Amino acid sequence: MAEIRFENVKKRFKDITVIDGLDLTVKDGEFFTFVGPSGCGKSTILNMIAGLEDVTDGNIFFDDTVVNDLSPKERDVAMVFQSYALYPHMTIYENIAFPLRMKKVSDESVDKEVKRVVSLLGLEEMLKRKPKELSGGQKQRVALGRAIIRRPKVFLMDEPLSNLDARLRVEMRAEIKRLHQELKITTVYVTHDQSEAMSLSERIAVLHHGEIQQCGSPSDVYMNPLNVFVAGFIGSPSMNFIPASLKNREPLTIECNRVILFLKNYLFHKGGEEGLILGIRPEDVIVSDKKSEGAVEVVVSLTESAGSFNYVDVIWNDVTVKGISKINTDLKTGSRVFIEIPLDKIMLFDNKSGRRLAA
Amino acid sequence: MAYCISPFLWQFLTSLKPDSEITRLPPVFPESITIKHYISIFEGYPFLRIIINSAVVSLSTTLLSLIIGSLAAFALSKLNMGYKGLSLGFVLSVSMFPPVATVSPLYIIIRFLGLRDTWLALIITYTTFSLPLSIWILTNFFREIPDEIYLSARVDGCTPFQIFYKIILPLSAPGIFTAAILIFIFSWNEFLFALTFTSTIASRTIPVGIAMFPGIHEVPWGDIAAASIVVTIPLIILVFAFQKRIIEGLTTGAVKG
Image (tube, rainbow over all chains, first blue to last red; front, side):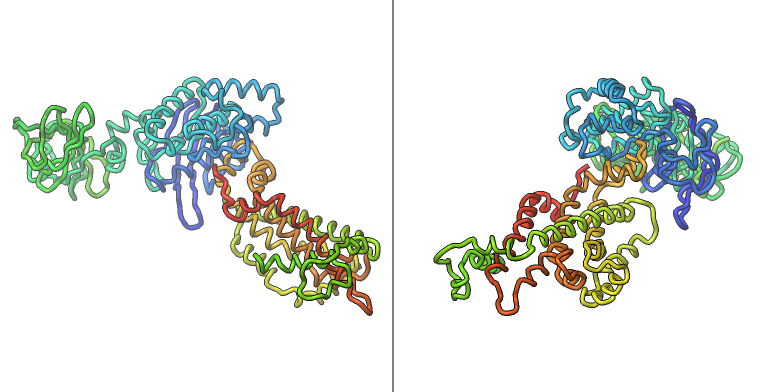
């Protein structure tokens, strides 16, 4: 168990700066996730924690020790990879036992530990088999087993669920969460799947172009995104963004898609002079076939059923907006319907900087 | 098939014919079969010694070339080092020189080192010439092993050398067999260097040994044929024994993770 601290960590590959000054603390025993689109540098961060990549500048601490120059072995970390990376020529038993064998643990205690891990993961039947005889989910369990067997200080996972099908992914997600609750090992998880990040983590860091855009609890990041990127990346389906412009600051009046909106409870003192982006989550946009007060008329372009409700794409003055409708409303493509803009759910962003505008 | 096998069959038939029938054309089945030639090659010539020379030289070359080659290939395929492509190209350039062009200078070097007519002279030379082959084959094999397996082993606490012999080598067995057999055959058959660097039966290898069979007045075709058959047998056994491995090695080489 350890706390991981980054102090102005930089990583450059030749001329390309991948990580430019990372400052962050992952608390002892925490489940922390780096989430971002591919190429945002999240795997690089993980490899630097593991010791598989050198740190160009700055320091990484485990508790109070600088680990920059320690080998992976000395750092006492365990890692799970996207492709499982099991050793194909060894049995499952030997795969799981491998880290202990490298530490020259006696056969007797190796056997005891393997039994413990195997029962934790439900792999008792597989011990004599080779990796190629296992399904994807089982392989990933073995990889998890190999990682937890020696009770590492830090547990690193690089997109461990990306190779699994949707059903298994949800199952393994629960498994990983359960393991973390039982073992309380500091875990750093990397994924491009925001829903995975949201459901697993205690805290997440949203990465883009090698910089942390926002760091906080999943609900905090979801409710209060600091910029357009985070707002668009976190949440599924993505937030709707509609161009708008500032008419008056106090009381706040904006024009959005040829509609004037008065935002009584929204306040910001600067920004927005060069245009605004109005953001609203699909689940806050109610599409209905009945006109209510303050509703605007739109045209249905697409409906998708999501089980207990429908997602509806509507065209509002040339802008496509995604909203939801009740399961029993019958909305035909091309029909004229109404959406209500809930003024208290709106988020405004500066068009130029992309920053969230708030008091 | 026929084109490849018929000389071998002819040779085989010749080895079983009495001298009087050997030069008869067409080379059909002998009227009387004799194993006289097979006995005479071991009695009339130091043939056993020559076989031992060849075996020692070929096996040592194979072993040495695989050890050096696999270490080099490991570095070239998995370790962080610069100029990988350049190094591989440089290694390959070694095999661009035809042996005829290098044999005289090498002879001078060997003589200077005092290695004339020793096993070592041939082992060193053959290893040098077979290294590009083993490095290239093994580099390609090692590259097929996913990097994540290598990284995973590092995180699990292996030193690079432990990864090499615990993970990389077992996973590349087909490649190693392929390289081993190709190198063995090369050293077993090599003639030019063997002829130049050896002068007595202390180190003379099979191809040279057989070429020395003819006396001043006669060419013992039967004995030569019998000797050729005898020395082909190890190769045939080798190839058949590892056939499955070689085919794996030549075709896929993939390691499914």
